[in-house]
Length: 257
Image (tube, rainbow, N blue to C red; front, side, top):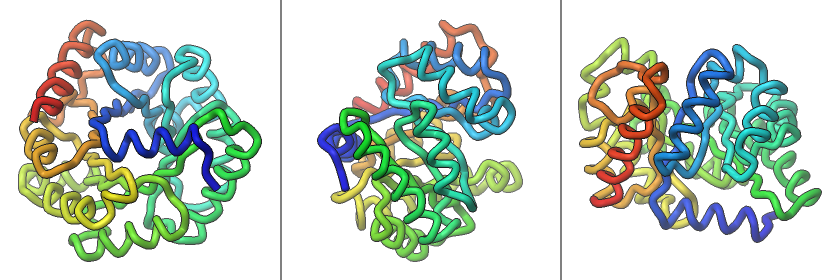
């Protein structure tokens, strides 16, 4: 089932530029500071990152973000591999709008998570509740494999797809990050399913990469700790004004593509 509130968000993410900040800090106060700076710069979604959720705890982090940002779209990057319905319930109960799980968990997990989403949609139709599935690259590549995974996830009921170049993989092989691999895979996935679902691109993107992807039709971008600069340096501890400046430049550059 869907609701008008959820449908509006899904339609916007499919057709308009959207920008999500990965708040991958390991403590809550810094995470809230980064999120505030990102919202000031114009991001659309606040991602409570996996390191933050695991270090501080879902039942602590999600309500704290909701209290601090009552009107923001909040996504919990749970990287769920099992027990999906349990984890989805924790996210939605705390006030989160979107749960992001790993597509490699399979169809059973996807259906369990979507069932909980539908339960919360029925209970409060005015709140958007969405489920995103991350296709983990290179483990679920190449493009043909990623497309098959995306189709299975959409058949199971998810609302959006992410093509996610794994942090460990791109650290182990920097050439993978600087090659066309991510662009080739996410472009193929978007071409196949972009008309029916949001397709996000994730993986330490820098501005030039994101601009090239935007020119091919991609609209949903995740900003990592490098804040759109062409390196792997996390900048979460930078002054908030600098964080806002980098993110605003990324948004402006991509939006003008």
